[in-house]
Image (cartoon, rainbow, N blue to C red; front, side, top):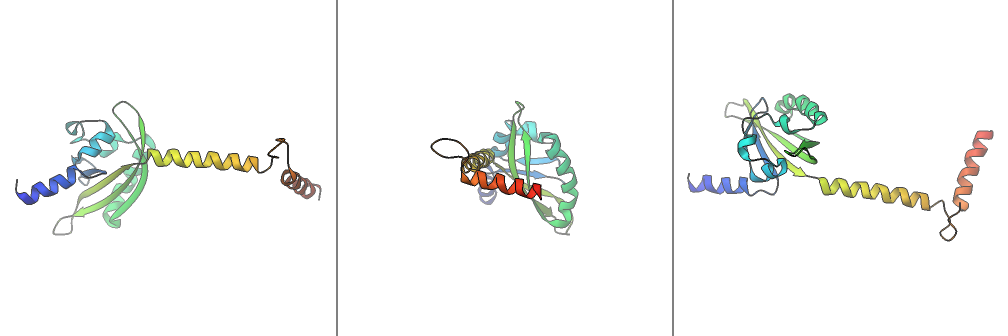
Length: 163
């Protein structure tokens, strides 16, 4: 292995995101260390398998539709879910980029995978906080009973209904 190849292999292996190389049918030709960590599998357990083998059923269907389109589009970003070896579902973001040979023939794709578990958790927490704030906006902070805003809202709804 030449110096240049070692350099690129090091970049591939030490990338902060998972990276998968697939053929046109979606078979995994190579994957880096981070991808193996995300899947909770050894590289040997991934190579030769379909990339869809590690996706949730909903994500699998979506991927099966997108892979043929990738050849014409060139790049697709998707949010999906992978299933680890232990059966845990992990939300991920993927960027799939089509690869072509010197003659312009579609040869597969490079897929970058990022774990978005923390982002999903924070989104849910934000939704929960917004619902709590919305509820609090209709209650008096001291007594906990409906406030003037709640009265106005209820009155407007009932008035409209009465018309």
